[in-house]
Image 1 (tube, rainbow, N blue to C red):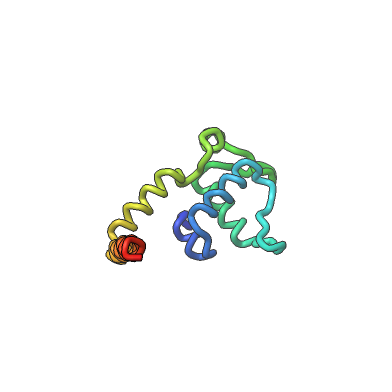
Image 2 (cartoon, one colour):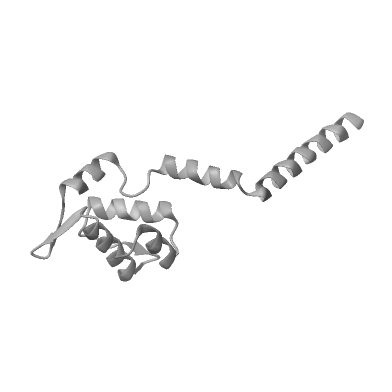
Length: 121
């Protein structure tokens, strides 16, 4: 059983893209996800297996059906990640990065230099 993060890493997908594909599969479990006109069967199979393992969908007589948990996820609009919470988490991680502060400082210095040059001219 692969976790959501393992699927993202293995198939080089962003969490947002994988979440959208999971939600699409949850809405229509019978479809296949295509990327650049080539069906990525392993990626699709991993996503379906994830949904089955987490009990969002179930297989009965070769037909995929949403479970009660899957219906709830479909109504709320997400499977694994809430985009808003994910963006907040990404911002928190960005604030921990010293390169972020260096780039902000460089931008402020450039803005001050531009104002000084305008006043000087």
